Image 1 (cartoon, rainbow, N blue to C red):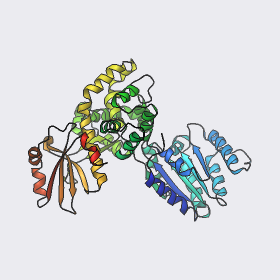
Image 2: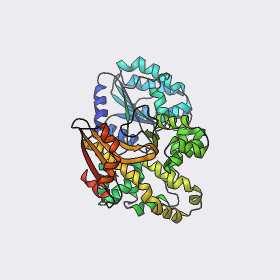
Image 3: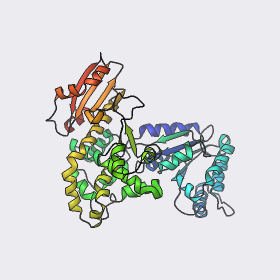
Image 4: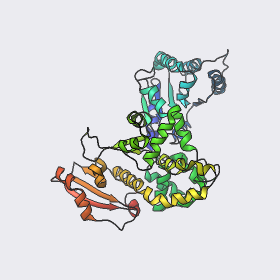
Length: 439
C-alpha cells in the first residue's frame, strides 16, 4: 500500500529539520501501535542523511555492536575499541554531528526502560552538553504509550522538558480511508463504514486488508477469522506489553465496555470490586479508553460513560477475546455467524462516532458530543454547538433511514433548548447514505 496522508506531520518534521541548521533538535513521535509512526518518520528521512536504530529486546552490548557497524558504514570511518554502553554510541554521533548534519531515528526507545534505565539520564547529560554545538535531528519513536509518556512528560524523569516537539500520531481520518478504497476501485459507503468499523483508520490494519484485497465486510471477516490470521492475537499482543502482569483486570474492564457496559457502576457490579484506579490509568496513562459526559453538563458532573478509543480494539474484545475458546478450536464459521448476527446492534455507536468525526472536520461547530439525562433518558446521538452564530444541532444516527422522527428529537432536546434559548435549532438525521455529504 502506498504512503497516505500525514501532510501536516511531515510539514512539522521538515520545519524542525530546517531548524537543526542552528543547533540540535529532539522530537518524540508516539501514538498507539499500528498507527504508522515508523513509516511516517522513514518517509520524512528518506532523502536525508540518516541512521535508523531499532531497540530490540537484547542486551545493551549486543545492541551497541549492531549500531557501531551501522555507524562505520555510514561515516566510512573505523571505530576503535569495544563499546558496550549506548551512551558511548550516542556521544560518537553527537561528535560526528559537530561537522555534519545528521538525522538519527531511534525506534522503540522505551525498550531501554527494560534494558538499562540509566540510558535516559546518560542521554540527558550528553544532550545538555552537546546540543548547542551540534546539528543532529534526533527522533525518538515509541509504541508503548504509557512508557513514552513517562520518559518525556514525567517531571521526575531525566528527559523531561528536553523534547522540542512531541508528535502524537493518530489513525487516518475517514476521508483517507475513502481515498484508499477509491484507489483500489472498491469504494462504496458500505465498504467505507465497515473499514472504519474494524480498523478505525489504523494504517497497518488498512495495509493488511488492502494487501489481501479485502474490501467488503464478508472478505474482511474471512481474513480476520482464519487460521494464523494476523488479527487474532493482535489485541493481546498490543496490550499485554502496556499492562504487564495486571493485564487480567484491565482486559475484563475493556471487554465489558466493548459489550456496552459503559458506566463505572455497571462494571463494578459485575466484577464486584472497585475499579476507579484502573479506569483512571486506562484513560490517562494507557490512552485506551476515554470518558464522556453529557453535552452541556458541568465539569464536576458525576454522570459519565466510558468508551474504547480504538475501533479495532473494541471489535477485538467484542468478537475475538470474548470467543477465544471457540477460535482456539478453529470454529471460525461459528464466530463469523455471531458477528453477522450482532453487527447491526454493535454498529450503531460506531456510525455515531463516524459522523461526529465528519461533523467536527467540517469546522461548523465548536463543541460536539452526546447527550443523555438521568437513567439514560432522552438520549441524543449528536449535539453540536456553534456559539458564533447562535446555532445548535440535534442529530439522530441510524443504520437505516426509515425511523427518524423530528417530533421525538424535539421532545428529547427540551431541557437543552431551555439552556440555549435564542439559538437556532437544527434537527438532522444521518444514516450510511449521508456519508458522502461530508466527503
